[in-house]
Image (cartoon, rainbow, N blue to C red; front, side):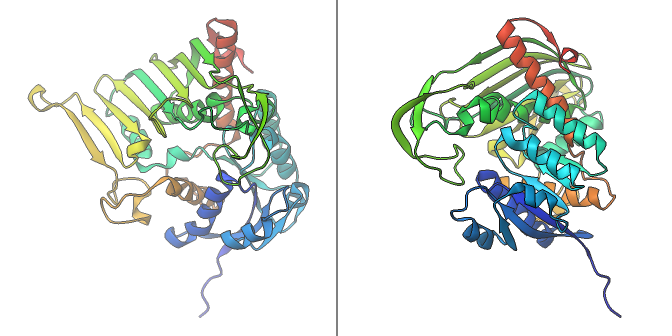
Length: 398
């Protein structure tokens, strides 16, 4: 008797930089570690720069390559378009793909501007296709487990939230890459880093941010050397410098205060020049029955304080979130205490995308364009607060 033929999903990836590599790796390994009813096929890699694209496609396992994203979106063989491109072009690509009936997975933040994000949401509402946004940190087993603990009432009513994302790569030696250009990126550390911690804290708490009570935005490095070339895969998008200087038009750091729908107060801080912090991405959430802490630089661990225990045995415990059967996604990977890393968060998300397209629930909630638009509105409200030096209700931002 012949085995039942698996369903397939032809994936096209647009963009081959840092995110292009992470997405390529995820689509290439998800079927090897997870048992999925739908098998992803790495159909097309697309980039508007011809140099090296053929070698890139062959290296990462893509069957073919293309230079025109319009052709990719119109290709009847493509089922899902995956966007790993700079923020300013997300909207044009996503709308094109949705109008051609494709599912769309888009890098975060949703778009470079609120207007573009709104266009994407409106296109998604008109389409029967599914949308997804790569807020990959939800797929850290420790973060997903934190979500489950809060949902189960383990820390009680939430009173205080602290989110932070600190990096130190953007010093004076880094040239004027696209990430420092408002026309291309939309914002700096705010859209790049605060987007993640706003999404994570919304996800873990199950609550929405309703107001911004104050914000500060600062650009420390006003000018940078212009670039003479592009280095694919670099977080800065290129490291070759020219003598001429150009103006930096985005923020280096943004801090803001906020309130959640359940009454909790919160602080958020994102910075690209926080010396000594390479990727310090985390949160602390304090409730009436306990507290939790997460720091991505120790991504396999979740700190938990149980205030319901007798006083003589209370204290912070460190949960090693690597136990199969107890911690989300771990069943697919390695034995206890054999940690997974950054790349696996993308593979875990690819698995959840395949589950949703098969009509099943994801392991934990998966952000779509509507969900990511909520985060985009919070980010916009913070920038309005910083610019106008005032309290801003998120409901003002449509």
